[in-house]
Image (cartoon, helix red, strand yellow):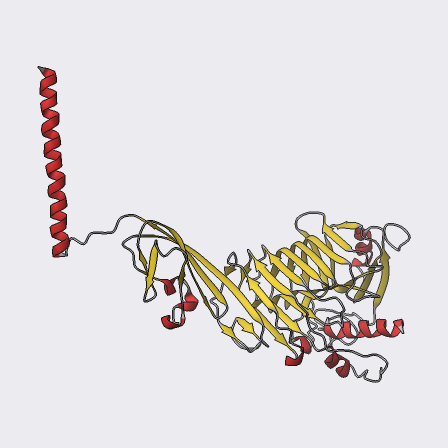
Length: 437
């Protein structure tokens, strides 16, 4: 029975992530003279394996035309690697006994060229192990795109927990896909390519819910969309693979359970949530803090294939905090909607602004009216966007000398100042004369 599960896992993994026997035809201009059946399996660990050094292992296959290289990592040792070029090879790292896969570049910009890269477990597709990647500049050529993932074509796929730190992916289509596991932390990740920077999706009948994905300090605006979150119907892949005759295996529709995606201090331009069917949609919460740098104006929609760059499909929530700061004088009257491009064309009556300290300023017809010197915050929520502006009120109100009443007041003020000056001068002069006598 275990063998059947293993076979099914590998079979369906090959359908969803490029590189196995059910992939589409290869591009002969990119992969000359490579046989899809060319596959090599090796083991990596410090004792009792085919290789104990990752550099030695990769050098062994650099000059070969194997399309698929499966590396089974049998311990949690941290393997450090230098530059390698396996641009014709799709490399699979697998874990035995839930050992962590721990790979670091020898320098901050270690270069690894592969056709594609994938990490997953054998006996347990999700597993309790973690994939740790650090200090790698990865180049991929993969052009295998599964139609049920809407042509996402990830360069790197991770079917486990992950910790990503200082990783750059240069791919033809999409970047990093985290497709199973309980939690993922992605820090200092850069994607240079098309389609999607990060893909979050679940393709396994997993007993372990994906609880959190945290993305920080990353550059995800140099592509069509920074983040795509997608629920896949596992059953659809089984049907299309024509293996419905495996009747003794019951597959359930798969969806996320109680997970969140949080993006902070990153360059972003887009986020979309979709699902194969509404019945498997999981209504996730995707949260962007105010520390992100948005390279595109927010345009919301519900259709994954629309031109909207924020797509809330199937009752999902994509919450975006937007925060600005400004210093204004007491004489200022500024429109709140002008601070955010997304609000410029919105009916002011549809936005309710709230003032943290109404003694410092008030709002009339969507405009800020300063009342006294101080600092306070004005906030509003509109279509799951949270807008806030911190105002620092300073300076004296301006005087309009063209106003007759203001002119009279101004004359009175100057008269008083002049009178005080004359009296002061007279008193000082008398005192000086007394001293001289």
